[in-house]
Length: 154
Length: 154
Image (cartoon, rainbow over all chains, first blue to last red; front, side, top):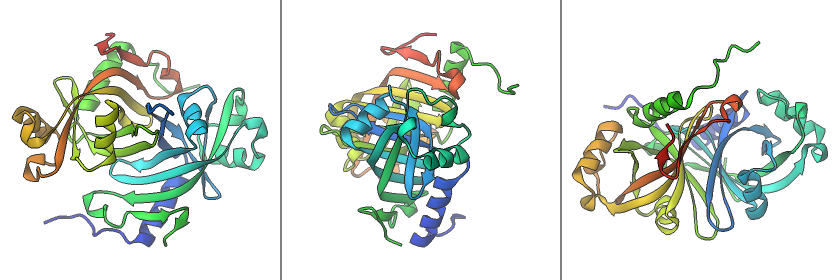
């Protein structure tokens, strides 16, 4: 006898995913690969701005090098048993001075730090979701894809 | 004025890392790369057995394909602000029938599921740590490396 609630509907998963991505002080794990196949993984603060994942991190990092080279990454928000997995494509990367002020304002409003305080050497990565998968445990693997080819399925 | 405790010593970080890796029902995020540079990322249950990260997952997954092809991965345990980051090399991968019973017993003892119940198509990955980095927030980036070249520094 399980006390677990039934699997969520696609609409519930989208609502929950957007809540996790929009949460105050949200973090994520971002996995990237180098052109020669070295996997990298780091935790970063995340902002969800106009349907884009926005990350701000030093330019001199493997994450930035890999994303700029490969144009793709895989971003996990939530927790290991409350997953929001977002496959992304690089839409833009730029020093903060060349990033729209509204994006930096939105980032600072969601994160617990303001990148404008120490902008030197920092890059904003604007990442466009192409696939979103949302699941908690094994019973939610079926139906986990709620965005495909950049389009919400619900 | 910060209420945050001072950065942990290397010895404290090793103790905390081993506690996180040994925790009952521990999960991790594992990042892998394909030979052509596609990053993959999934959450999996983790067991810490004789100084190795042990993961058990279906053979027909990108994680297994990538690890077998590239022989390396990057495994994060803990949380985004309480990180244990383990760069690993593949020591062995085998179907459960060809995996030491003691390893499966240890896995089942730590995880909240027993892979021996449904072993068909499953693979055990025995991953040897080569670097371990442990940090909570920015003030702990310095001193985060507590294992290098497979050797604990403390």
